[in-house]
Image 1 (cartoon, rainbow, N blue to C red):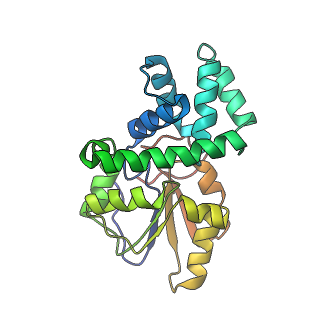
Image 2: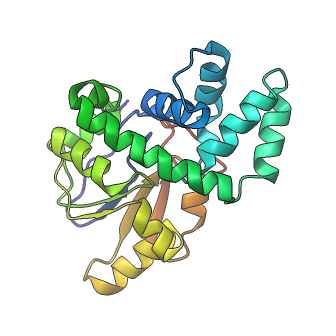
Length: 226
């Protein structure tokens, strides 16, 4: 795929999962082990998780996706409908997210090489590695520690990293980018994400939103970055 030429007069705000890296297998194995409290081999669960990964925004929603997959494996329409109707934070999903991040830290400390293999660069990620923007923001629902490790491993330089912790504090990616513009002299941001809920959170007209069509989500009318 051919991508637009990177411009030095623009700040680029890029999502990580699905945009720069393809972490879908890491997310599945980690989510499944956290949900079931053990490793399991369930090809149907895995294929449905991969198919509907694009529904998930914040990491706690992996809990809801796996719960619905395991309750409705033979009714995919029910999985999607129920997810849209019930994906809010709960006590159970908060506990899941906390353990999910702890399990990730454990995997990283036990065998970094095996873990990083589950987070390869996308084609666009390779493009960014070779054509790194002068002004690059990483804005991701991934935890900060693993995001830093991935970016350092692939030698991708950035000016600012906003992680899951920051998004929780600000309330949305759109609010973070709006605040960034107010604090800097940059006049325009190109925001590229594969989840339209994050793009929908943008209200500032100086933040131009693009959908990453190579990612996990489904577009609803945003221009694609290609």
